[in-house]
Image (cartoon, rainbow, N blue to C red; front, side, top):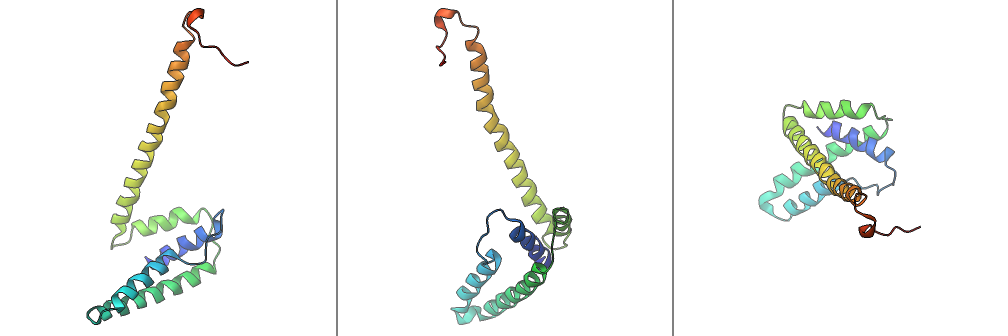
Length: 136
């Protein structure tokens, strides 16, 4: 999973229209969690585990940044992510749910335009004395 995420992140960084900071969000989150766990002696093992995960991801990201990914690589990487035995199906379900919501929002956003178009069309049938003056 780390390797695929690093590759997708590398593609996104290299192809973003606006360059963001060089900080990786996943690395930042891992470090924040590690620091929280490191504050307590009871969770020092978790802090060490997060440090190891962060180190591994950073290595994958450094390697991925050395390659040039193209648009055709992205769907293949996403499919690889979905096929992972642990959490692959969960990732797919989340992405599918987000896509459904996005499509619903797009459809809902079109409705006011349809209503305005219908009202505009109805106004054209009004007698001249009720017509709305138009700017010239």
